[in-house]
Image (cartoon, rainbow, N blue to C red; front, side, top):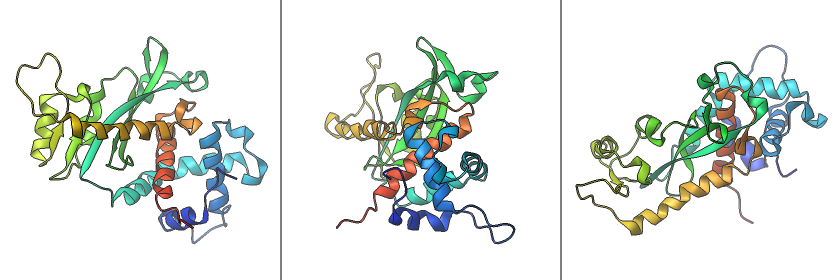
Amino acid sequence: MRYELADYEWVAIKPMLPNKPRGDPRLNDPRVLNGIFWGLRSGAPWRDLPDHFGPYTTCYNRLVRWRRAGVWGRIIDALAAAHDAAIQMIDTSIVRVHQHGACIARNRRQSMGRSRGGLRSKIHAVVDSNGLPVRLALSPGEAHDVRLAGKLLSRLKSGSMLLADRSYDADWIRELAMKKGAWANIPPKSNRNDPICFSPYLYCARSRVERFFNRIKQFRRVATRYDRLAANYLAFVQLASIRLWLRLNEPTS
């Protein structure tokens, strides 16, 4: 099936998955991962998982257990370790919260925020020059874009260029980039009095971060938030990003 892991994808992530040398043998990992990726791409409820993937409770429990163990974050970090650091792009994208994910008390703690269109969540991402994700985070939908910029840009490398839209035109972001030895190529706001060095030609490359959001929203579990817990939804965003990284190594024949 087109949702399932290819052989080369499984070979790439197998060494990064937890081992279980003792106890009862668990349902084999490729089968369960394919069930998780089926839910990621289709957006269907867990109870609708086809039987050949195994019990839906097994797929859900392993997604959550490995999320709590930090497995998905470690895989992203490992795949992104060799990213092209010459250009870094930061941006956000709004996601609608489905009514099945909204019925939780104190939803502000779950990165949900109410705006004119209803409950929303916001995905924050830093991508490299190929449009592949390096850092990911989640916030309520009404939060300002720069809310998590300091955390996401903490790994900027010296000599790199930071591309961002006008909402990131803040003195502290430019100073942060300068301290890291990077250049912030950000269009100045209309109310800025001091002249700012800005290259519209280089800024055109920022479209790759927009393309990244378009690609991960092809996974319906990312395009609409059905999960009540922010950690589970972020895990699906990480899984969609992992698939993008894995496809980079797709063999050509």
